[in-house]
Image (tube, rainbow, N blue to C red; front, side, top):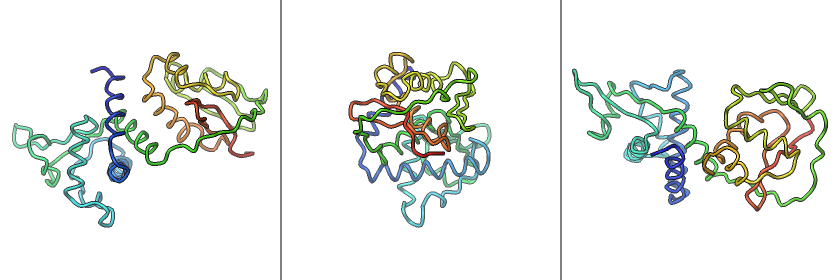
Length: 230
């Protein structure tokens, strides 16, 4: 299965889930992210299962069920070594309770899922305004990887060829006008579900503390929009 088909299938699956179950998945994902950042590694051994319960928000069987789903969706891998053999989560889901079990997070898929689940739980408020953005001359690319909103507010990227920078260039070239998801899809060759995930990453990671965000409208388009007078 290619990447676009994989992400499309994940999106379709998530859209069939109840809000309550999405929140439980989000809780497990947030706990995994905390463990990953605390250990500065995407490989977690001696899985502290009790960390997932959240003051009894989740039962043990619910945590194991969600971890099993993440395993089956190829978001994580869970294994336990027994001599020269290796026991997987598919063999026995309850190996997560064993201190010799190792959990590996596949970061690209994990980050995609985390952002998409969060977007489903906290959907964007839809912009219905038709006001024009006052796009200043000081808003400009100063290098291939850096865009300036003036007043030392820089947006920095790591790769010229990344999908993030391609989508951001569509938005800056529009100078505050809306850009459709369809146009981004055609321009990048990526699936719509993947593009929406990148938009979420731009909003939460790249545009933080710039005084700008990506605002949607009712037609499935986005534009750069001021959030403050920083």
